[in-house]
Image 1 (cartoon, rainbow, N blue to C red):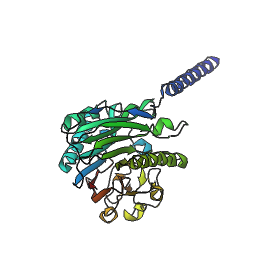
Image 2 (image 1 turned 90 degrees about the vertical axis):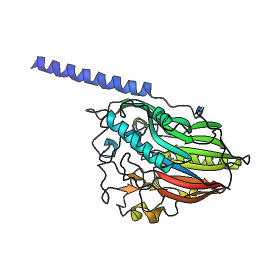
Image 3 (image 1 turned 135 degrees about the vertical axis):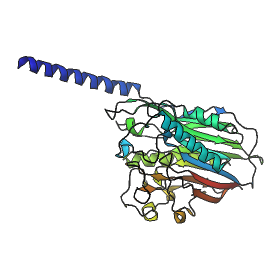
Length: 355
């Protein structure tokens, strides 16, 4: 019995040391990028935007190519932490590219784009986008470069370097990444780092379009963090507008842009951490959310990934979209009903002109 007890104690000590070593590794490896980082513009085009001309912009959270229609994610209560396999990632990316090419936008914004990740089988999606859209200039802004997350234990999600891609058929003169406030406790290893990018595009009348691409936190339960992220984004929007720029913000806000999505989509009233009502009343003066016709069309931009998608029963909402300054005119906006074939999001498209 003494020998058995010694073995048990030894195994417990070894397990404690392994756990302690991993926790130390996670904390020592964790880092955030600086608040303001100049970003490199690749393949910038020479044409400039023109005032009083209609353009089309698309925003699409591509879910790092891991979310076909039947996929479920462990953080939402589902089964999986990684894509099924590399073939699925490649297939999803091709499907996403086909959707974007069919929409033929003048500018597009993508979120959840992996550069290198265990969860996406190390497919460099930024490189794939640039290879697939050679007539666009583009900018990549890193959201996070997470340490290896050994969770779930039987199929850990691993490391991931991921972020935002902004692309345009028009000249991009410069771009900058801004860090967003996040939780500072252990939850930072699961909701990961957050940021937005601001890219400047010259206009023929001497003006500038400030194009902001953002992806706010999804799983934080701290309302102070959600508010702080909004405040920083709104402050930058106001700063760009006060500088005399046209301003368009697009992306995944992880907030209900309609404010009443449960009623629109006939779902449960209980809110998820990623479907709190968007604080429309707090928008800076001179800005609005472009939501007209979206409630009537009732096409969701996101689905719950706790299980595979089933139309009519899966929890859905509208958390992706556009905010514009009053010198930008939106003539139409629509969510493209792609039935969540290749991502847990549907893309959203806006037609606009610069006044």
